[in-house]
Length: 280
Image (cartoon, rainbow, N blue to C red):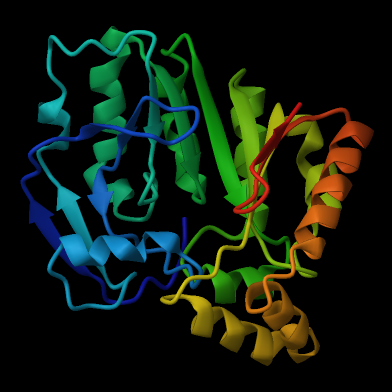
């Protein structure tokens, strides 16, 4: 659930809507109970949301609480059979959820409508809501992980739950009879221990998804700084991949992932930012 959370600007706001149509593959709607995220992941792609919020703070230093979110679930909303994904630009179980319970309250409101729920988080807090999850006929719970190395994880995702707690969470979710999946993302070239992660959680995950590290203008320097401090020997390789657009690493890795998932008899979906999707 994260620890040593720094001072974060918390602001309660009134949202105009909470269930939004989406073009994300495998989802009809998304729910983002919060704007901003306390996890402070250095690679986060959602930083683009700042331009819609008016915040001057660094991404990770503010969270807007959509305090009226549960009340925005309309009684006549037609969501039965539709896939609602929690969440596309925030973590639904970041630390503030322990206090505000917006994710839980929204789920409670949706039980009667019985949409298909898909949920992704980096937080061990997710196990708190097992009782609610079990009220849905169709639901899957994903846990995201980039590395098993606790030290590296603390640098990459300072205030997310440690990898060990995430692994324990997926085990509890699976033991409760829920459909579970692991999102190995973002894959850091030559760092993310793909086979070790698959082997570690294979008994507790119904399937795996994979996404490669996507460097953009806002996160490139932070990632390069992380590589320089921890694995300076890899910096030339990263520049070759991201500046010279050498996709051979990802092409080879795609084949390795397919072979490894077959080895452990696991379904998979590969969502790389080049080369499209691979799925079995």
